[in-house]
Image (cartoon, rainbow, N blue to C red):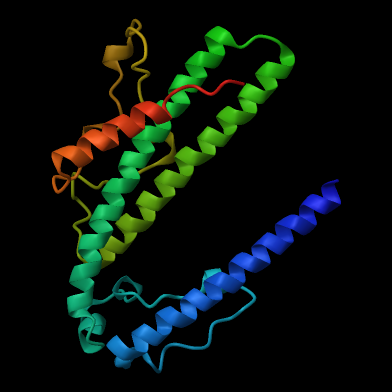
Amino acid sequence: MGHSRTEAQTDSLLKMRVKLRQDLIDWRKRQHNYCPSLKDRIDAVDPTSPELENLFLPSSFQRSSDRKKLGLAELAELEYELRLGQAYDALDDLRTKIKIFNTNLDFKKHNIFGQQSNTRARQYLQTLSVDKVSAADKYRQARQALLILGLSKTDQSLRPLHDHELWGKDTSHLAQLGDTKREEPWFWTVGIPSQLSKSEQTEWSVECEFLMRPKTY
C-alpha cells in the first residue's frame, strides 16, 4: 500500500512539474515581448525542477539602479502594489488560521475522549499548525520583496514576523485570569486593507466564521 501511494505521489509531482514548466515557458514569452532587456538573462526552463526557476520579477534585482537600467522601474511600482495586497492577504489568512486552530484546540479539550479520537484530533491540529506556518511564510516572502522594492525596514504595518508570534487569544470563551495582561502579536492590530469594499469585508467575515467551525473528528 505504501509503495502505491509513493508512485501516485511521484506521478502527481511529475504532472505538476510538466504544467508548471509550460506555464513558465508562456510567462517567458511574455517577458521577451515586454522586457527585451531580460533576454540575455533568461535561459530555457529546466524540466526536472521548474519550481526553482527565477521569475526575474523586478524584486529579483536588489538595486533600484539595476531595475532602472533594465527598464523595470515602472513594473517595480506595479509589483510593489501587488505585493502589498499579497502581504495583507497573508496576514488575514494567518489570523484566520490561528482562529481555526484555537477553536479546534478548545473543541478537543472539552469534547474529545478516547485514545483513537485524541490521536486523530492531534494529527488534525498538527495540520492546522502547518497551515499557520505556511501563511506566515507567504507573508515573509511578500515582505522581503517589498523591502527590496523600497519598503522601510521600520514600517509599523508590515513588521518582521517570527515563529513564536504565530498565536492569538481564544475569543470563543470568556477571558481567563491573566489573559488581558498578555499582549497579542502586532499583526492583530493591522486592519483589513482599505481598498476592500463593504460587501467584500462582509464576505470576508462570513467566510472566516464558516472556516472556524470545529471539525468533527
